[in-house]
Structure formats: C-alpha cells, structure tokens
Length: 112
Picture 1 (cartoon, helix red, strand yellow):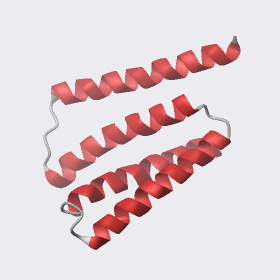
Picture 2 (cartoon, rainbow, N blue to C red; picture 1 turned 90 degrees about the vertical axis):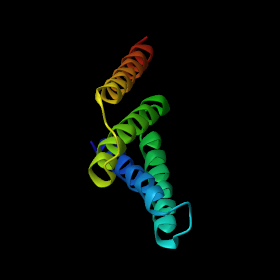
Picture 3 (cartoon, helix red, strand yellow; picture 1 turned 120 degrees about the horizontal axis):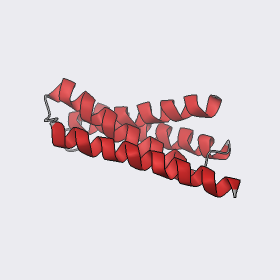
Picture 4 (cartoon, rainbow, N blue to C red; picture 1 turned 180 degrees about the vertical axis):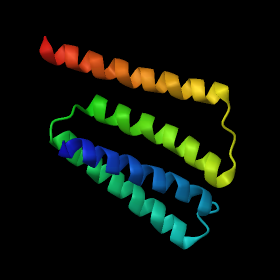
C-alpha cells in the first residue's frame, strides 16, 4: 500500500513541477523555477523508492507518466483555460489503456 501512496505523491510532485513551467515564464522567474526543480527532484526520488519497493520500472513509469499527462491537462484547463477537447480526452483514454496493457503484460510475464 505504501508504494502506491508514494507513487501518487510522485505524480502530484510531477504535476506541480510541470505547472511551474508555465509560471516560470521561460525560466525567468526564480520561485517557479525553484518549484519545478524541487517538484521534479521529489517526483524522481519518490519514483525511485517505489521501484526499490518492487514495483516494476515499466509499471511505475507508465502510471507516473500517464497520470501526470491527464492531471496536467485537466489542471491546466482549470488554471490557464488551456484547450481540452474530445480528441484530447480520447488520447488520454488511449494512454490509460496503454498503462493497463503494460500492467497486464508485466504481471503475465512475472507469473510465467
């Protein structure tokens, strides 16, 4: 259970860091730049802990990246009025499906 909580925190840190990119205004504002550095370093550290706890790298990264993409898209829609249309939502659904395929394939390989 702990590894899943740490992975969720890693996703949150990555989303925070990615949103700081917008606020950094091309790396010209120091506080958002510091936020994105801390966010990405935190995310990668937590992800490394999850991998050390035994979750396969492919699963860890697929969930981290896929959830991050979806959450950044939704959050940037709310914060910045960025576009979010049906085609984009469909693409995120395909990413989620891909994460499921990677997970199932990983578990099938481990059982063999």
